[in-house]
Amino acid sequence: MDPSSAPDIVMLDLARMTWTFLWLSLICVGGGLGVVPELERQVVDRHQWVSAREFLDGYTLSQLTPGPSMLVAVFVGYRAHGLAGALLACTAMFLPVSILTAMIARHWETLRERPWALAAERALAPIGIGLMAAGVYTLARSGVQDWATGALALLAAVVLYGRWLPPIALMLAAGFVGWLAGL
Image 1: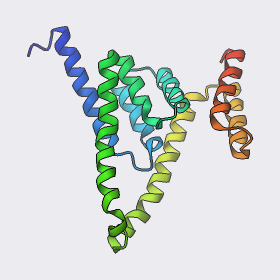
Image 2: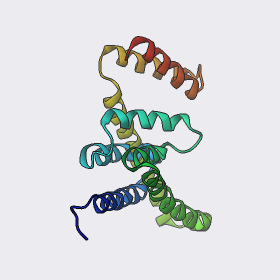
Image 3: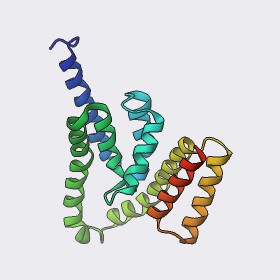
């Protein structure tokens, strides 16, 4: 393989992307939000498939869809390599963890009575909470740039806490306010 030719470089990067999303899918303890810090580090800092702003926008768009939050992987794959990148990123992000979850769920009701399974279940809960907090921190660090975006984020948190608007309506309203304010 001649690494200097463009098709080979693209294939190598697609393989790298597939591998990256594959192992990221297997560390999604606590859900997709838990893997956001490492996902951002990989796709923005390490491989530069998207910019920090594109990552944040892609994550926000993935929240508007009815699917899981890790649809941001499809966005990243598409931005980096078009349809082929989107398909590979989607497959790598969702297929392994779906198979693993199906295998574990099939036997979990009988296994969860065992002490080791109960201990594992209890241990994963705080780990998942910590990883989700890290994900929220990562997204807030990228999204809050000044007092205006901080105020908007704080207002959104209050509205979410009060459950005065559904999250999707809040996201659309905040996006509209941000657009009006030129944020």
